[in-house]
Each structure stands twice: as C-alpha cells, then as structure tokens.
Length: 359
Image 1 (cartoon, one colour):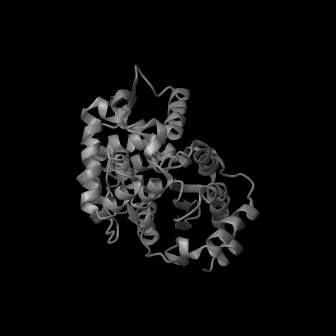
Image 2: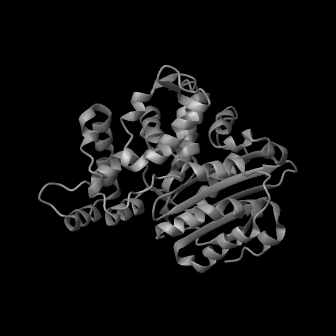
C-alpha cells in the first residue's frame, strides 16, 4: 500500500517557502504552475487580489478540500486566546500530550521534521515545549498531532466560531484530523466496499462527531492508537478521507488573507502572535528587506494541494492569493509543490506574469 502523506507539506517544501526569499526567480517553473492550472481548470480553483482588485479568478466559489490550510483558523484562534490571556503561549506542554494524537504511519515526515527543528533551536526543555512552538510546528511543518492537541486545548467550538467571524458562508465543519482517520478502519467481518458505502451515507455532522469520538479515545485511552492498522488505509479510502476533509473556497480564504494582511477583524495585539505563527517567513532578512508582512499556509494530501499567501510590500503594495487543486495524482502534487514557490515569486515581482493570469 502506498502510504499517505501527512495532511500538510513535507519539510523540504516548507523550508523552500521560508528560505527562498530574494533567490533568483525561476520563471520557467512559475510558468509550469500556471500552465498546469490552465490545463486542469476542472480540478482547480484560483482567486488572487492585488490592492483590492481581483487580478485572477477561476471557479473561486467552488468548494474544495483545504488539506493542511485549515490550520490557519487554528492559528487565528490561538492568537486571539493568547491576546486575551485565555492561554499562556509561553507555558510548556509535555511532548507526551502531543504523542497521543501522533499517528506514525501517517504523520511521521512532518513530526520528525518539526522535532529536528525544535532540537536544533533548543526549544525542548525536559521533554516539553512552549505552546507557541507547538503552534509554530503546526504552521511551519503542518503537524497533525499539534493541530489536534491545539484544537482540543482551544476548544473545537471556539475554532469553528472563526468561520462565522470571517463570514465564511461555504466553509464546512472543522474536526480532529487523527480521529477522522480511524473512521476508515475496517470493522470485523466487513469489507472496504461496505465501509465506503456506509461512510458515504454519513451526514457532515455524523462524520465530524465520529472523528471527535475517536479523538476522545486517543486522548484518554493509550491503547486506542495502537489499534490503528495502516494496512487497511487503502488508496481508495485515502482518497475518500482526503475528499471529506474540511472544505472551503479560494475566495473565502482570500477573505481571511485580506483581513490578516490589512490587520483587520482581530484585536490589534493578536497580530503579534499571527506574526509568530503565520508570518514566520518574516524572520528571514531577505523577506524583511522586501515586505512589511508576509504570511503563508499550504497543505497537501496524495490527491489535493492548497496554498494561501499574502503580503504587503515596503511600498504598500498588497496581494492575497489562494490556489486549491483536487483529484490529483500523487506525482502531480509533487510537481505543484516544486513549482509553487517560483509561481509566488513571479506574482510578487513580475507585472507581465500577473497580466497573463487569465483563466
């Protein structure tokens, strides 16, 4: 069985997004990203704004799986609760608490990358890390275990309330990621075909509740996680899981990006934490030379790819962009991950490239 990638980006791709500022542009790769979108319109949604004007759009109201990009709403809730001192972002949490939601067969690439980063930056103290570093691990490396732990800490309902806060009319329910994978474990004396048929009948509410019940089992029963059988998570089940991830539209996520870019909707003090979590590329001196702020979140499964980013340049130029793709082959996901950073760089720097973005 082909193992499913984490719901999020592998470390190398995240590092590229962080460290490629100021690097020489690669217009051929940017063109490859654009050409893929143009050749695969039925599988793609695009919405890009520049200084409040729409410069590119393609099925921007199409509902599509968010993959790891949904974690942006978790980061926003974290920032708000930190500002209101509901949580102390500098409090330490034992890594064993995160381990409860870590499924090695699914999330090992992301989690190992985050652990390597945390050790290199001396963030681990006596087997514990700061809450803010847990949240940064969720955003920088797209760790599912971190996301599930934080949603539990912040309150799932509180995270969901951000859907209303940002007036997202089409956004579907947010639920625990690890817990949702256990929905696809085959019951005894059943078959994959029967399981697919049964899950297809689930309402969104029932599906979310099943994921939540499994989350509670992971939280309270150390033996529950051991029952996960990765061999049962076939490509057909992986695809169904990917398709049923929390979904929204590119237009809605550009709405969020615009609010963050313009320092709107949230309390002013919350943007300090947004800077730590969403705008981590600004820690790079090359970004600091070009931008006042720059935020990003991307994600992927074996069958879907999503990207949201926004920036304000030193001269005040603003841009917000979202590109979602679904029903991909695994090799297409890898290509998009390779091409997306050059695409973003051309969007920033090349007016002729922006001009040709017609779909």
